[in-house]
Length: 107
Length: 117
Image (cartoon, rainbow over all chains, first blue to last red; front, side):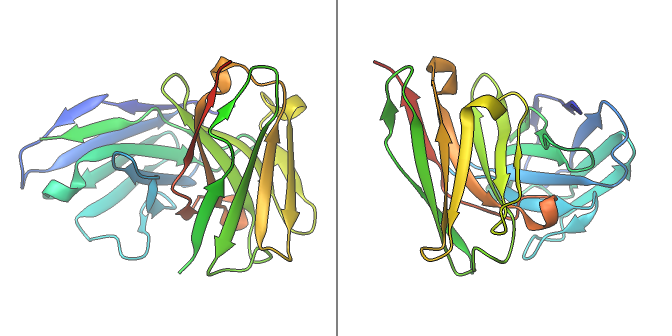
């Protein structure tokens, strides 16, 4: 099973500033990585697939990069509605599909 | 726009069977793979099982012995059964669309299932 590790656990960012979230895989997953955003009481929402491709209707301030074992999600200018928990997920080797433990983004 | 809605009991007794249904609207159940995922404070997001309308099914090895799934094309819904539940199965259970067995691009709102006597 591929283990996904996210850092930091909590990220405090001022409105308008850049947020940088990291995700590391225990073995290479190529570019087969997705990012999700989850707000309290809601289901996760797909942000990024293929490590860098934004999903439908996702704002351009969200960008993904990386390949192999190290990945980054960047929010270029944090908005109030971006507060929540962000998860990465690999889909290279399965079952099982595995998620990171999440990074909480707060002001 | 696809919508998924989980339903089932919110409370299950230890050793009994957890049964949930996911109703899909806005898309055909034959169009994709469909999965169940759960979320608990202790284990985070955990993928459980996937199902395809032609019968293909895949299980999380850690849960395989206790999980069954079915799909009803006439009702456009799929289901989950988890047997012999314990308190560690307490979680929010989500159903999700799982295109090409890659990412999960549509989720239900989730249903909290508590295992307690």
